[in-house]
Each structure stands twice: as structure tokens, then as C-alpha cells.
View 1: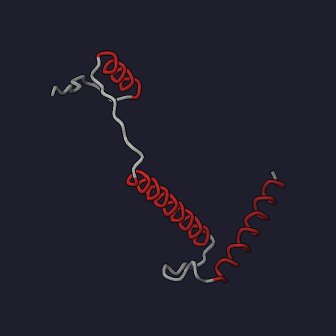
View 2 (view 1 turned 30 degrees about the horizontal axis):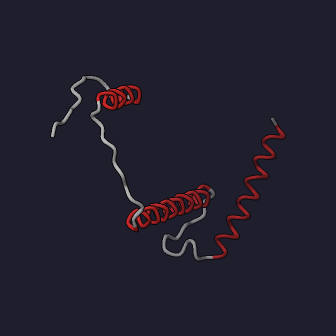
View 3 (view 1 turned 135 degrees about the vertical axis):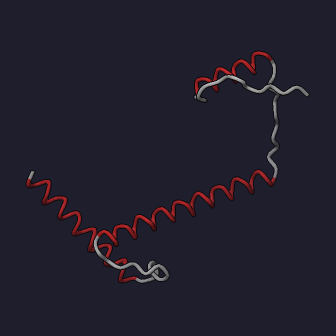
Length: 108
């Protein structure tokens, strides 16, 4: 088995990568790979989708907590998302923020 290693100095860029891959394909150094549609591929896709959703939920919760902190409301780390009064406070804060933004736009 023969390995080809790039020895070119300089920063790696998408353009250089594309040129390198095109040259590898032209010279016949690349080989075709087949991946069957096994249960492992389906599991991998499902897990990847689940992890994406979890990451998006974490982002949303962090943004939500930052809105509360920006308005001086204390956030209890353990019970923050279970308290319905906090959700009601968020609705009130959002309304206040929209009113402030609208007021600022009217004055400029």
C-alpha cells in the first residue's frame, strides 16, 4: 500500500484542498467506498438528530436565562424551568422590551 502525504508548506485552504483532491482523482489515487444502509447507519443518524435537538434546547435555555438576568431576575439553576411564574414573568418582560423598543424607534 502506497501512501501520499502532502508536503506543501503554507496554510490549508478550501481552494488548495480542492486542487489536491482533483489531482488525486485525476491520478487514480482515490478509490470508491460503499456504505450499506445498515441498522448502524440508521442508529447513527437518529443519535445525531437527537444530539442536535438537545444542543438546540440548551441554546434556547441559555438565551432564556440571559433575558431574565438582563432584567435583574434571579435564576434558580435547579428549578428555573419548572416554575410557571417565571414563564409568566418572561411574557411580561418581553412585552416591556417591545414597548421600550417601539418607544425608542418613535423618538428617533
